[in-house]
Length: 266
Image 1: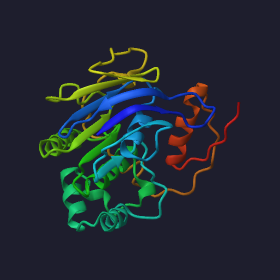
Image 2 (image 1 turned 45 degrees about the vertical axis):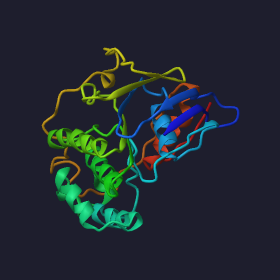
Image 3 (image 1 turned 120 degrees about the vertical axis):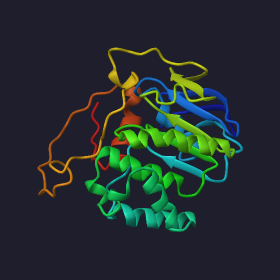
Image 4 (image 1 turned 180 degrees about the horizontal axis):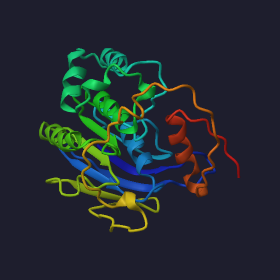
């Protein structure tokens, strides 16, 4: 798979998010994508997965089976986790046992009966990862998959990534936490200023804790005293988010994917 002179922007007159990117993704490769917030990492992953077309350039030879887990799983759907995964199994043409087996590996069996809207960030991330793995992917794209995961799942996910690469699949992971920094044979892509540099790793930035490797945490699952307890409707509030103009489209897209209503002002 290749990216040939790929450039991307969200609108005809909008700023370029990526410019003239040239990359090769061989079979069996594992790539960790790093860069600051808003640099274009998620956009690069969506281009690789085929969810958005490039504004310029081409992406030939994309594998037939692509698994993709976004950084914000769309929980605003009227399903339990089990019903959602059963639906995805039917779409993928795989037996329901595929979801059950992955739920065991990723410590998610206790989540299957819960409505998607009741899941915490880490729990929703697990369901998103499971759906990306239902059909053995030839290309696996994971956007911030380690965010909010418990220690057991943090340890298991690199094992799964290694298994996919060993059978010839390619894996691309965007990760602020640099969990694959020392993964054997992994390549590193740094996204900055619209360019992608191969082989570069960002220096830890004390001012942005999300760019520094995080120590394992015992558990990111919600406690019974928080999200697991049914609660009544909460009042709505307006939170103002101020971003640079060249990041606005990407931030708005992420918020909408999370089920939030957005209203843009200049």
